[in-house]
Amino acid sequence: MQIQLNPNLGTTQLASDFQQKKRLRIDNILSADSAEAILDCLKNQTAWQLLYSNADSSPTRLNNQQLEQTTIEQIKATHAQVYARATSSYQYWYKFFPMVEAITTGQVTEKSPLNEVTKFLNSAEFIGLARKITGHSSLVKIDPHATLYEPGDFKNLHDDMRDDKDARDKSIRRYAVVIDFTKNWSVNWGGEMQFYPGQNPTTSESIFPGFNALTLFQVPTLHRTNMVAPYAAKGRYAIAGWLRDDPNITRLDLGDTPVEAK
Image (cartoon, rainbow, N blue to C red; front, side, top):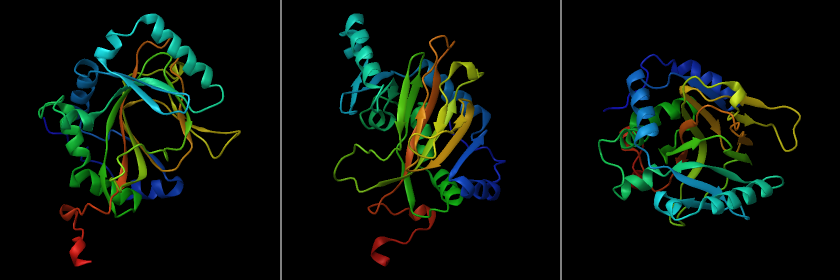
């Protein structure tokens, strides 16, 4: 299927709202059919991996095969270690699916909604919208991945500046994008993104999971994903990524000037 934007977005107002706090929530970002197809794919067609942090906050990923080879006792012990470290350092534990990696290695077919949404998020339509809203005319790409926070999953305070990538990649994270695909979420279940004005703050702003809703914010911004309550009835689905500059990429489809002409 073809992923489509909601045709009724008011770009001028969205840009004005974003400039006030460098943060914005856009409800009904996609067409209804697009959002439903993506949710179905996330729930029923996605081979989720377990992603968690080591002692130095670096990531460890376990795919389905690795999880099958890991005992419940080992998982519980690792989980307890992450929780213990989380009292005083940046730690996380949630489900993850590397969309770009899966597409390049053939794990995701061309007809999959995850392939379609990856192409859409890198299309002139979406990148052009992001440029208009942020006022940042050099954005050229986004690297989406899928997340699932189930009961007990969390991600501690961070600012998105950490960037584990190939040294040859010269791109820079400018804005974070999170598109929620969770219906009928209760605020009692936690799992909200919480934004903070600084370290050890006394106030915060919360954005709870929703359906077909995009959250956009400037990098760096201090935030965390609060733990999903153990009694939550379901998980929190989203597709996230970072809008980037990249001096090695020219978007002719967005009217950029070719490098040799500059």
